[in-house]
Image 1: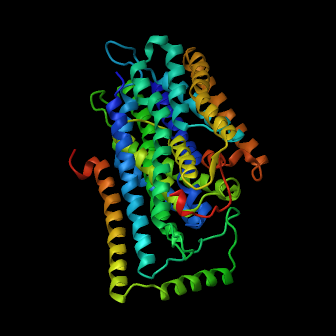
Image 2: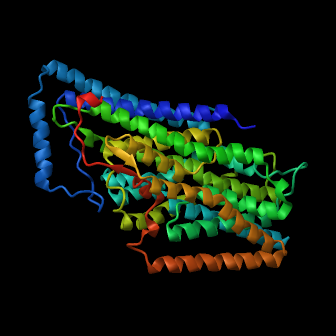
Image 3: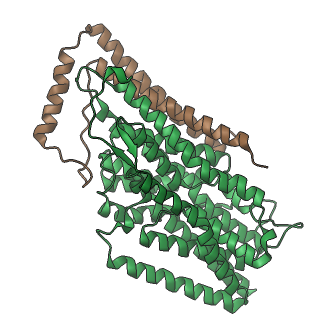
Length: 111
Length: 393
């Protein structure tokens, strides 16, 4: 009566989907850093839950990122490659999400 | 005939109200983590959640089908579901939802709905009215397994995200870049919430329409206008509920970092979407809580606070039977005929107004509005920033 197969499918689908999406995005970030573009994303708004960063602290984080980028041992060519690879990862990640949505909307594939 | 029309209008109104409370209850599932990490401004986050709930409600109708034909035995071999029964079930669900919301007990809107309907059906037609096989396979087991699944998935994803971006040389690791990703992953959760939760109401309304012959039983999908009003009700509830959450956010979620938030949200969205696709009506709240706990454990130096986790678990277990009892009482009164239903309606309405008035009194600073998802972050204790070491790898 109980459809264990369906549970296994849900588990496998959720795990593989999440690992692919999160993995690709993380890899993209890693490659961005490797390419010398360290993203510094400041919280959009400081709710009570977030430690408040002063503008000076934000500027310091950005300087640190820029400094790390200057000391990069890679050649310009390698850095460019890493950055492109990072964008490729982000693109694949987005594609994976869109594919997932495509799969669950019956109207899109006539079933 | 007039009585039947009035009844069906009442049922639809109650179902939509339930949908509204559902959105109200669940804004935090999608938006607590991005607000906590500062990925989005709270106002933006809530508006986005409302819009995506609206969109999500149109995407899939598998869950609605599970509810409108399945759990309660209908047709020739089973029983004839009356609108009175659905009405009583909805009263049970709404009353339980409002009580838990007021007292901050962790609860699942979905289980409240099923509990209410089941309680009403048992009073109306005896214990044989329920198809326990479908109940177990489509409701109870998914409810137990889904949070565990989401937890394991979020745990793995968090480990992965941290290990890929980890640097041992102390240089900036760019992990704040996960904030951008959180915008998308939390949107996906809101969308998934729309695909799963709005449909529960659609299923109930469809069931009611079938019982009075306004819809052909063979045509099992919800009608278009039903989809539209349910989508609107849940979006409105999400939007309204968000303001309460924004006002009171600030406890419990400090420990969530962008990378964790992203992993947890992606895990939640993937689990809900996969389950919706197969017609499992699970609780988005429980899945989101499972994910938050899982992602907390995926971080270095984390430890489960079993007391908090246990309290959340007890709340989960309680919801279905408690709503069933309220639903059963409502069904018992509704059995007295037309006036019984009216008494139910008046009692239910009075109760809702009472709860609203009560909630106005202690709006801020009380733990009643801290969501369950926010509370589940508390279930994991994390030591402050332990240094990464190569040997731990």
